Structures are given as C-alpha cells and as structure tokens.
Image (tube, rainbow, N blue to C red; front, side, top):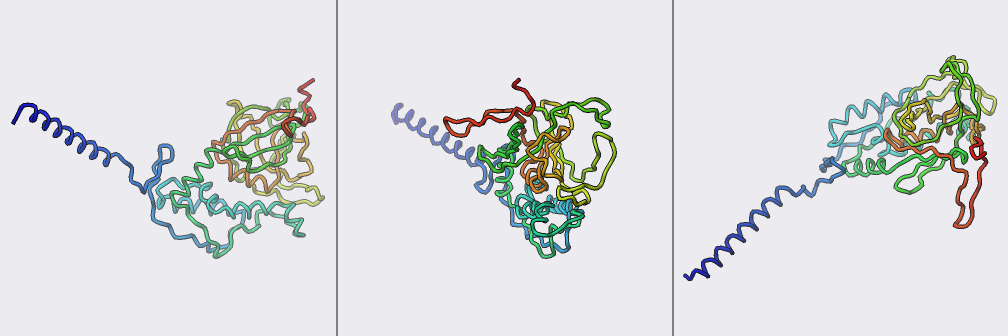
Length: 313
C-alpha cells in the first residue's frame, strides 16, 4: 500500500469517527420533542389530570379559601407551579361569573344584593379543569406580555397584551387639591401621581377605613340611595417610581364618581371591572400612569382633554 493511499484512508477514518461522536453529542443534548421550553423553565408533557367536580356551593365569602385549597392539593400533580391566576384563567368562565356579581349589574336584572359575600360563584357539579403544561405555558406567556396603561385626564385604564388592547375601563382619579388625612396625620396631595411601576400585591379581603377620619366602616350608600355591606373584591397594590405610596387600584361602590377627579389618590373602577383587572394582571404586571392631554383620533386629528390638574398652566 502506497503512503498516499494509507494517508487518505487515515483521513477518511478520522472523519468517520468525528461524525459519529458529533451525532452522539447531538442526541444527548437535544431536548425531548415532548418537552416545551418557556424562558428557563422546561414544561414536560404531563398526563391529563381529571377534572375537578365541585361538591359544595361556594359563595364569595369562602371563594378564595376554596381556590387556595385546590392550588395546594393539585400543585404536586402538575409539572409546573400551579397558582390561583393560572387555575382561574384556565377556567375563564369563573371571571365572568365574578364580574356579574357587580351590584349595579344585579340591579339591572331587578335583583337587590345587600351582602355580596353571600352570592354564589361555584355550584355543585360545576367542573374545573387543571391546565396541562402547554396551556399553562400559553397563559404564563400572556401574563408576561401584559401591562396596565392609565391616562389620568382621559379617565381610562387599559389592559394591553402584546400590543393588543384587551380591555378599556372608565376610572376615577384623585382630587386636584391637598387635604389633611387622619390616616397619614398630615396634609396630603390627593392628586393621583404619574410614573412607571408594577403590581406588587393584592388585598383579597380588604378592611375599609375613611382616610379623612381614620375610622373603619362596613357599609356603603349606593348611587341609588340603597345601603349595603361593603363587597369583598380584591384591591391591587402598586409601586410607582420605586415608591409604595398606597396608590391602589380598587372598586368603587359609587360608579357615578367615575370619569371624575373624586378620590383621595387611588384609582377607582367598577366592581365587575376590578375582578377582570385582578385576574388579568398578576403580581409583576408593569404599570404606566401618565398625564397626556393630546389623544390622536386619526392620522390628522387630535382630541385635547381637559387639564384636570392644571399642569399645562
């Protein structure tokens, strides 16, 4: 055998060995096709979990305890961290049911509700589905693309997901004045402050205090002159410009005050809208509170809003 032939055969053998090693490495490092990756988390395909059949009547007063118990019981059966927001968004009809407990929606149906906490959310034999890994991945991905946009002089709160407007809600904002508040024991600027921040927490069973007097209260006088107990609807805690100044997003029992500068600084929304904001905007959702007086209507027309805080003067 000539030296040139021996050299050629050696190169071919070396090339064959290199290809074999590369294929072995590829097989070991390629993810299983049944796995899906979201960020750094790997969602493995999981066996379907049987639907949950509700056994008892669940009212608003016990709703959160019930949902928490399901999350605790089923979290160990999923291959992702199960949460309240994941579970409820996988069963979105629950949000619709909660939104319909709004006092004024019930009045439109000729139903007066004195104690909202006694309203039924879930009934025996209702079925709840535990999301599989792919649905959980989709819901979590949607959360990561969601943000809250609030324009104060427009009196609007918008929920935007991946540049798509999902909801637009009327709001009330802080009054254009300073006032002594007993709870803070100081003169307070009641104007809602602008800035960027995020949702940092929830008050799922809030207590109610008059910030002017510092006294706790349990009842509310509605716009229709009826008196009811205060409803149990989550309040959303925010951090703006790195400061937690108690500027909350919460329901108002008096929607006649919406689209007005009426509050002590918080952002008020309808009762039904508050449920939708709560479940579409989990902790960590970015928040932008702005003060834009010029709103584009078309490519060549602009709506000029009232300068409610006199910032332009």
